[in-house]
Image (tube, rainbow, N blue to C red; front, side, top):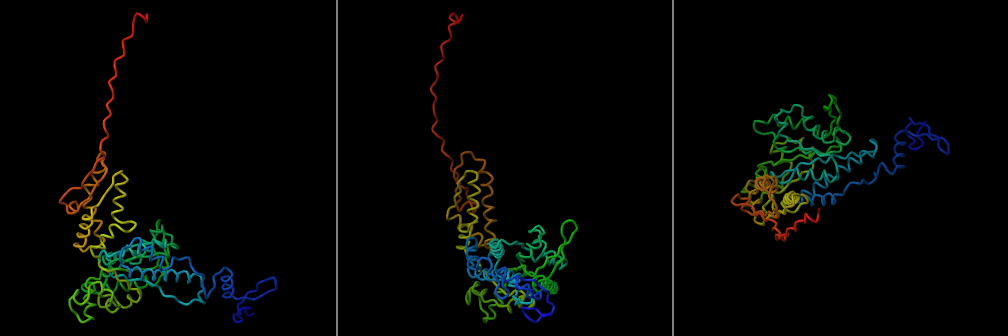
Length: 403
């Protein structure tokens, strides 16, 4: 019996309706149910995902600079989760295959690669896990799937459904490049990562000696690295020269191509699984100062809050912030070095201040950051002493009268 809807499929089942019996095949039945529930096959229902502009706005609250990177990543992440929604709402036979938008981030140490990835995961309220590629090297590629995926499972308390919507950031991906004495191992690791990033069903250990299956097809992979000296590879394409004379470091990085990355040591098949390439600028001193003070969770705001909890007002001189940025810029650690410098400079103050009675204000100068001077402590002035009048002694009672 042919299907009454498509008139093609003969494996139709009979359904009773108010107007009599009809014959309908499984694909048509699924499509009709989807339409009834408001989800059509050819035009899926618009998701509740934040738009790229909304994602970018959220990033702006926590990430200073890197304007182009924030824009590119917002679009890539939006398209990835739109794809996930589409794949779940459309039956396999009717679906147009949408490719994954895995991301490769290239930028100097401390430029904010991990921070941006983590912040956008928070904006989407999806699980986030970070993995260091150097750990894969140390194990020689053994147990790779577990090393890459287990942290995401732990983040979701082994809720696989939740984990399969998450984001995994693999840091220092440039360390597994095919080069030098690690050439063979680097290529082997990249080959092993291919199926995990593209999509596989991994069997992973779980608590209690159990195992769980994790489908990685809808997990978004963001990989990042400093790719030291890739600017030289790019410059050679422009005829060579000296970086800074021909083009600045940041401008060179924006010109990176998959071919440059292949010359650096990532194999073409691996690069092909990372269609979105995001480059991040090297942070200058003025940007580092802004990072210290501007974002919602800025370091200076965090320290001010910590001291306020002890009833102490914490102030930073402008020169002190300049000194912190100067140190971080000199160390070439970018934003990553800011916290280390602040913790080192503030250690003695954070140790002593809570014990100081009547301490009202602590002011941090450049000398404190340079360790050539001490912080200024201001105390609450004691109130004027109240002199109590002397009390005249009471006259002794008349013992005769008492008797």
